[in-house]
Length: 200
Image 1: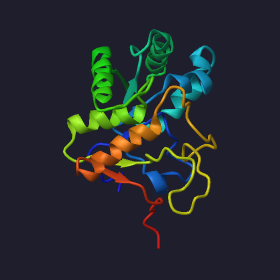
Image 2 (image 1 turned 120 degrees about the horizontal axis):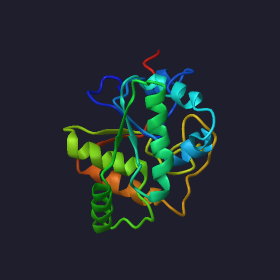
Image 3 (image 1 turned 90 degrees about the vertical axis):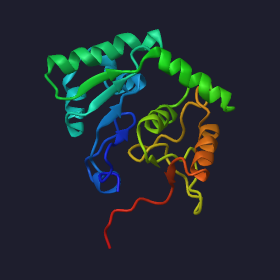
C-alpha cells in the first residue's frame, strides 16, 4: 500500500532492507534525517563518512530533508551531511526547512492546543503532507508503549528496541490526539493495524 502512493515521506532514515521492505515498502520520495541520528549513529560525520552515504543508497535519488536552520546547534552537522553527500556524489538531494515555516507551524499547532517544547518530525511531515497532498495516509503513528488490543510491549520504531522518545521535548500522545481528530474528520487516514504483507 505504501509503495502504491504517488509520494512517500519517511521519517528519520528508517532502514528499508533486511526483510523490512515487505512490511514498510521501499518507495521513498522524501526522507528526513534527525540531527540526533547523525550525531549518535554517524559520529556527527566528523570521522568516517562512508557508512552514512551507504545508508542513503536505499532511498535512491529522493529528497533528504535536513533541519539545518531549525536550531543553531543543528546547522554544523547538517551542513557536514550536505558536504558528505556532495563529496561522495550520492544521488540523494538535500533540502532544508525554511525557519519561518517551522516557527509558523509551531504557532499554528499551539493555537490548536498543542503544548510541546518541540514538534516531532512526524507532526511536521504530516503538516507538510496536508498542505501538498489531496489524500494523506499515516503509518506507524502510535505513541504508546503497548499494543492497542493485545497490550504487549512495543518499541518506538519497527527497526530498533528503543522504548520511548524523549518526552521532555515532545508531546507525542497530545500530537496523536490531534491526528486522531483529523482522522475522525476525514482530513487524513491513520493506519493503526498490524503490518500487512500481502502474503497468505
